[in-house]
Amino acid sequence: MNTVFLDADTLGFDVDLSIFEKFGSFKVYAKTDSKDTIKRLENADIAITNKVLITKEVINNTNLKLICVTATGVNNIDLEAAKNAGIVVKNVAGYSTNSVVEHTFALLFELTKNIGYYTNYVSNGEWAKSEIFTHLGREISEIHGKKFGIIGLGTIGEKVAQTAKIFGCEVCYYSTSGKNTNTTYKSVSLDELLITSDIISIHAPLNDNTKNLINASNLSKMKNGAILMNLGRGGIVNESDLAKFIDEKNLKVGLDVLEVEPMLKDSPFFNIEKKENLIITPHTAWASIEARTLLIKKVAQNIKNFLDKNP
Image 1 (cartoon, rainbow, N blue to C red):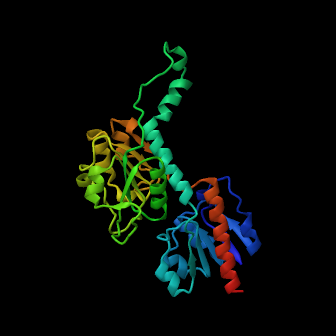
Image 2 (image 1 turned 30 degrees about the vertical axis):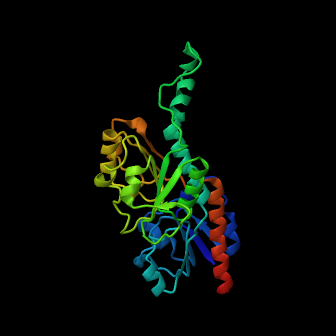
């Protein structure tokens, strides 16, 4: 089998891809522009892609047998065209749960403890100039006893809930599908969650129920000074509205996903006044070395399973 990885750079520089060589010829491209996709897949049996689009045109002009997505979402694949062409599409689920949960609390603790500010205070030599033993230039707060609302109580959301409870938070959740029947945590309406929560963490998929869910109307219901984190999908949050409410309601915000990635040069977040209230990481919550290593192993297993069924 000829295997082609179209965008290996999306998995970072510190992962070993040699496992794919055992399946036959293996060609790796760091990145692939849409105009080059068909050419690069012209002799491929198996395509590995993270975010490169495998469109109907690509499918109709190649001879692929298997498409492996190095992610859970498969929205970059024309699934109908693949089905009609008899191409198997495989994704990977569950590889990044621990990584995303830990990143959630990393954002939360930076927002509540201001570690970056205090580290800079020390490294810039300011503490060495101080006449007292401590410095309290930024607010430091606890999450113990806070009301912690989770939007989307799937696998990741539930583990965030478990962790928040360990830290002494009062946890509730809003089911974006309306189908979650988890009774371990209190299920509430979106309005109740927004109005009562001190901390809100989003772990939902982007769909018709969640697109633009957190907009001006809903942001206005949040407590002044509340914390909002989004580790689901960028389109769930209206970024222009959120930028305004960071300043108007002193919201503290941690984001790992944006509606358009990479971040737009004219993003409204560049114009906020309270810049210390906002932390944005470049879609890295999923990407611990452990998660990416597991991801590669699962992709390789998907290929092995396909070949075992199609010798």
